[in-house]
Image 1 (spheres, rainbow, N blue to C red):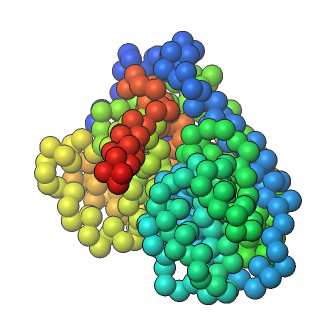
Image 2 (cartoon, rainbow, N blue to C red; image 1 turned 180 degrees about the horizontal axis):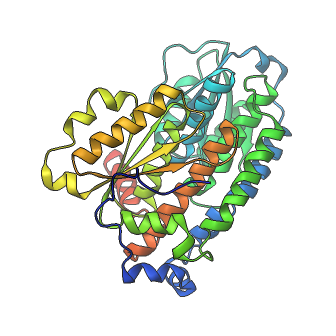
Length: 375
């Protein structure tokens, strides 16, 4: 069970429940602030993982695609994180190298043994469309993962396999499809060790966790609500190492998009070689930061020791911090339980800030402005 807490010797400031936090136990809060039902999308995540896995398992790619030995995912935001997660999973369980390319061009190392995946929920993400068009001339095998848009049209014209996502939501709420579509395809090509049993076990673990972090579960016993209370008014910095690093990135982006708040993610052990030196200054900033460690017993023993020592350094600097442990016995269990926990934290934080978690006006403004200038 994920444990929201701190190392015994340190009690972070600002951790007392506030009266406003009690709104998290009032169903009217969610009815008022969440008209687009982002909470329902988060609640559906375990079932969507199964649905996406089943659909992907039935999706057939041409026989010559079995020649590939590595995967390059073109994508941005919620459509790209699935590639990061699969890459981290393959790194510890065995499987092909999976890398994510975020940008307008393509990497130079594409050949007939590379699988080039254009992942865009809308099918019209300009960076992804541009990069995939650049990759059309390469010898890489190609597949498109989308709901429609320019990429679906391109695939139809060029005879490229198109995996159609059958789930209507904000792209970040379709994480099950951006991840398990890739996992299922790679399983069919022999590029990952993940099995149906692994997916079913992860889903079971998530469903069990859901019972204590769902909105219906009261604040006094709900660790996700409690963490949101502690993060309210603070700058969240999420730490994780090894296969949990992309989960920390997911926490960061969910707090950005759902909570409309500043957040950062950093990876161990790299942060031990630079970030730990900067904890003291500026003093005002240090007092307003809340560090969250995402931890698993499956991490290397030396990595776990680094978590502890890094916590000691944060304590010395007076920086609030806590640790959340993953659920389950396997790598996928641990990843997905922590991901689900973080999604709920970001959602509750949005409620505490009194904002609708679904709209992303800043991103819409940016896209519109870029479109006008391009025109």
